[in-house]
Length: 115
Length: 112
View 1: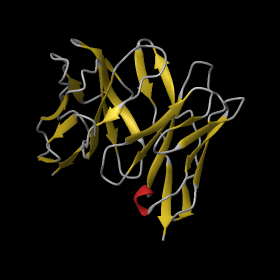
View 2: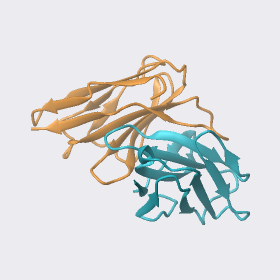
View 3: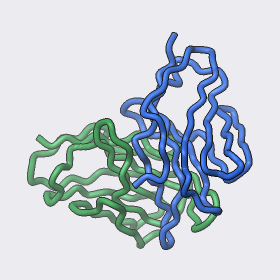
């Protein structure tokens, strides 16, 4: 997992509650990402951040929010507005840079279940 | 939508080479091809990437065709631990972001 930690590994939430997923990296990477994965599917990008205090919506940002106050941290909040929040959530980071090669490294993931 | 096409599943005998194909016919000149794999309920693991030359590292080899429209990931001596879903990804640059688009991948089963 290359220095990226996600907590908790499993998370249960009651319908209508907001919940925050943690992602921390000690790789000194500028860029961080959040993906969602549903059973048997590929990954879909929720939000990404190229630098501290800046972030952009991905393909499926509705019902989610993020912050990037520190370089090493990129928490994701799943709000009650997210219609189908039960999924496997993956955080990634990369050194950054607009062009050229830039490899993303992933954390172990958080499995969120809404009861 | 993913810019790559991969077979849904493949089998490989333990100890043999596993050759995983990927089509990326719309790739542009400055886009890299990346390969990741994901073992069940874990985060994806980076394997290798390349632009136009063939690449090799301790995990695998990447063969990219001259026209760059397809590539093959080669695991030279597959083991049971190589059973996973393998993703071929073309790196898309949008604005100043770095969007990796993951498709459904190829489920590789290494058989004893």
